[in-house]
Image (cartoon, rainbow, N blue to C red):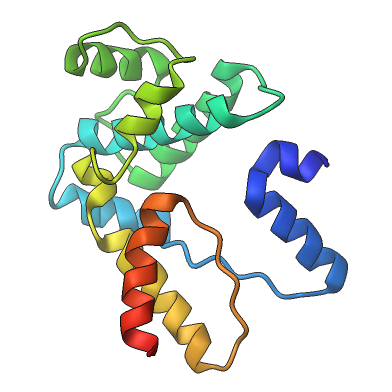
Length: 171
């Protein structure tokens, strides 16, 4: 139950796979490479705000919410390390400033709809950039060609894109 509370569908699948001794593979791209690719097309503010919004939306979906600052600071620290940016402030305060200058309402960590929307591919061009979906698709195809039995869990935005591509490529 704890795996589901903390990690949703992925937690459940990881738990079940572990119990059955089934190999698990994440098709996610390396975050350092992803950031380097995004930097070619987007500002640091846009990139980090996307990552921030994604994690704030994730925090809002948790049943037993940990402390907001502890939870977010863990991700902000990771993003600072992965980006290598020394000229960017990876703090909740800075992200709230970015939020406030790009929205018609003040930053509210519990405004799930705002952060869900801000991290959605149909709204946010950083989320919509194809690097991540292309990488995930290529990883799925690689394991499919190896004869692996594949079960994939992703959010609806990615599922829509990946389903179309997989149906086209695997038929």
